[in-house]
Length: 287
Image 1 (tube, rainbow, N blue to C red):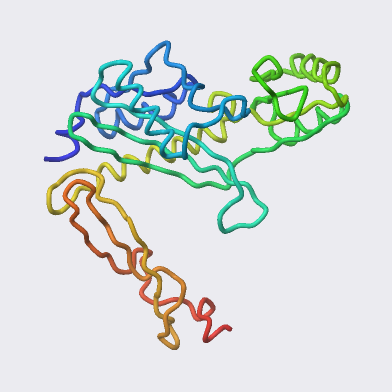
Image 2: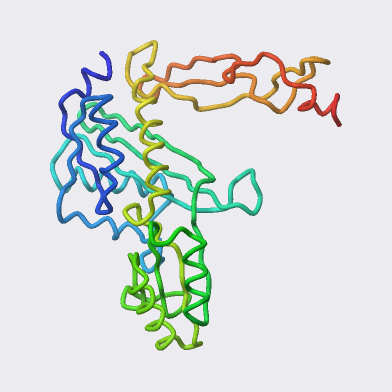
């Protein structure tokens, strides 16, 4: 059985209200013949908002899975897709924010769960407290406004949506929102941040597209034992030998692939295409 047999001409419900279908649907339809549909009246904001007035119910992956499962329950479909984004300091590059995008495919018919992801430094995620319109304009210019939308609030932690104005994409609405916030703020400040919802953030939308292609690559990776999609890397083993002294380095020597369905594992040596590390990466040759 191959991925075409599993997914060809099937309808997948995409759990979104922020136009993610623009970058998720085309590659899935082209590569896997999956017909992506967005269901109406499915409110994904109940699973958390970037503006924090609704807390996310679990981890990033757990929330994406919950969205997809609820989409299955809501529509009665057997195939669902959901994505979830997060923004945090990069795990290996200090003081720089990164965008991690998760996209999950749940196949109820075949009891499959496959996750694609993208970790990118490409993000305009930012926020600033301003005391006047000029400061607001300066911040807006820095984060790519008006192509990227903004959010304005009258206090740092909004209690509900009535204290937030989202989706600001014109100078007129920015001016009105900042004046409103300054007038209603308890400290005479306006709180600005980038609107990280996909439809207002083209940079994030590109990362969602990259995560989708990662999902497709994993779906196309079939288990050698049972031919089920989703044969993916579950562990990296470091210790690539130094090209000069042959001592192990911190670079990846091999990776372990595992099938979620049958449990079959397989080791692949030199996944990055090199058999020896540069001596500059060796703690013995370059202490």
